[in-house]
Length: 217
Image (tube, rainbow, N blue to C red; front, side, top):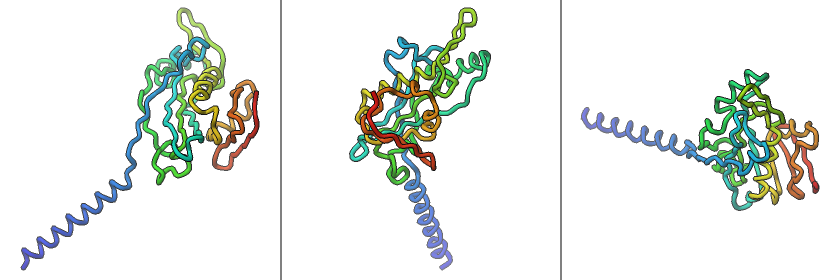
């Protein structure tokens, strides 16, 4: 009798453990790895990272009703404040696409799981890699003997957007650039892309919505 109870208890433990494992597996997001795209011809326009390497992004294509929606996520990473700090940064993944991971996990707002990312899961989702040390805003260089440090964030921004326009951004109906749009909205107009998608609405989340409609030259 005692042995039967022991087996019943053990079976119950196995069932509970299996149920817990199944629940954990169901709640675990399947990893979506997206490869890096180097912007072709960017170096010829001076659009380069701190060390002179080409700029890059990761793109996962949208589908269905989200095929004309675009989510742009700008990678963060702080600034370098002077020539020595920018030179040091150029030798890290924060200043060179040569040293960056070539595959990125798309999770959160970049996820393709509708349960975890109901707003953007089927949009075109882009992660712009950050390698200029100045939040995509600079356009200068510093020569130190035989080495050159490039602070070309503005050109990187222009080059990436120009490349994305050829891949469907030009036909976008909705574009979300996150909190970065608030920063971009305060920049001089020449920093913004000159070819905003026709009729597209641009916005950012969490109470910072700026909507712009119309055709730009």
